Amino acid sequence: MLSNPRDLFLRLLGEQLWVERTLAFEVLPKLLLAVEAEGLHAALSEHLEQTKEQATRLEAVFRAAGAEPSSNLSPPAERLAQHHDEVAEQIPNRRLADVWHATAAATTEHMELAAYDALLALAGALDLPRDELERSRREEAEALERVEAELRKLAS
Ligand SMILES: [Fe+2]
Image (cartoon, rainbow, N blue to C red; front, side):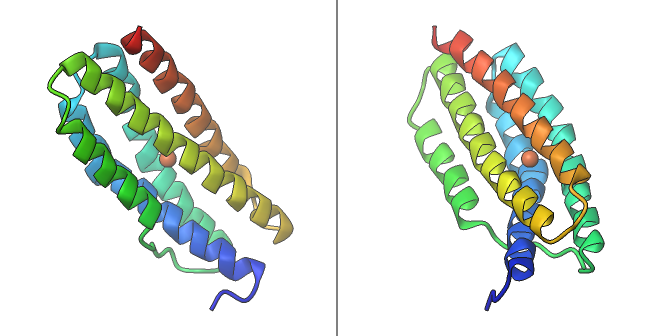
């Protein structure tokens, strides 16, 4: 049962920790093997390094909230990755496949931005430090911009 804002904060924090770890250690390394376009590859590989740091930052946020870091499966993120793979299999053209990879990356960033916005709002209400969350949110916003720019290039 999640009976107060702190419970919800920790639950969302655990889901975002699952998202960052899964992106850092499964999804992004696999995606980088599939992406052909140089610009998109560079953007995603830089974001992979940031994502590892984002996972570490979330662990620190857990401790700042007086809890041990623990991750919870995020069903929407898991489904998004499955959907990416299902559609990618149906695109034989490499450039078009890159458009799809960029689309999936942008969709993930939007989802992550929403998660960080909720975490920041709850952290504010709970009087918890927000710096680490703000830093990761900024990185997600920058990654989104870069991926969207590559998407526009690839689709044109
Ligand atoms: Fe992230």
